[in-house]
Figure: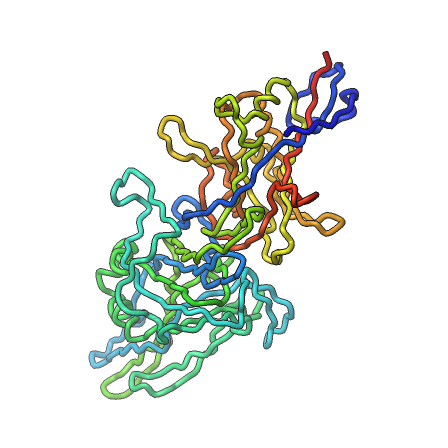
Length: 513
């Protein structure tokens, strides 16, 4: 049903948004509430690689909720090697000199994203950012060597760019590389320093180093997770091959060691977003760190000890795997929006009734005959606040799905309004004076296209948790990336929702006869 509310006014009494108004004429202005339909839309998979777009953020951990799908998020990354990798840089002239290299420790470093709340160089206080869930419960983390060769080009058709999706499980070779099997991972904001016990070739302790990560402008240590790795396995896979052909170039190494898998499992726990593309300092990016000691022996006597370390960044091609749990039972009036490969909403504008079978909703046909000029179009959707909304996305996003008439493939593309102005497009979480929470989208250009018959179809719109890559507007194609794990329950168009039902309000002008 189309509801009209109108008044007569001169053109100066209304504001035109994104349209052209004929001057020196008298127009009538109206507001129309048109039918819309909201449905739940299950997401089978999303793209998670960094080949054409760099997400920067990658999720690791477990999140479980009675209201949404359970998520286990894991990461696969290639590993970078230093340009020059040698056991020692020193040269010794004595013929009976021997250098014995001994690993002191090796671990995976995962710097947290954190906010300094108390600046004390000896005992700083942080709050961890980009993390939610039950931080008191450990999820299980295991590290593996990947058996999957990652390539930016499709191995079956090298003329095409590769893409990797969230539902593709990792190919693992060998046993876990972490020293403690099923490592219990609990995020800890106090993990800002650790000690390295330096040992001689005979295993005797000769020194202890304190290691921390700091910025160039401050000596305050930053928090990071440290996952101890199996020294014997690292020695075989990495250390013993430093000057071998496998380490002669990055390409050779990528073929030899195809990547490190960070695999998270468990019944519950926390979900952490790690930054793999920090441009401030390489020290803030995830890496494999090895500390070792070179014991210099002349004859039978220890002549010197040389402390060494190497850093292997988790760089190159990366991708994520999302193991999603079963969907919870939900009411037909509840629309579940969950990031990653969770769920989205599907919106049909102008209702589904099409009595003449022309593929265009009757309401849209009716409005096209009126030859109106759209001033504004606001799509408003309210939050179901009977479901916890503390993890609601700060912003949602709209895009459209349609079938290519030639290939019959489903095409996903941006709405015209986001190109007009990404900020005015809306989708921000708002709270009204009476406490009601809502998301509002401004889509006058898109509605104008439909009313002016610029398109001969009425595609469904999809609504999702916004990711920064959604606003990469190099072309009209929408790319299904999603690493935003936040979630919210929306109310549909049912009259049972009262003044919180979803609606599309069109403000328009029409020239008087």
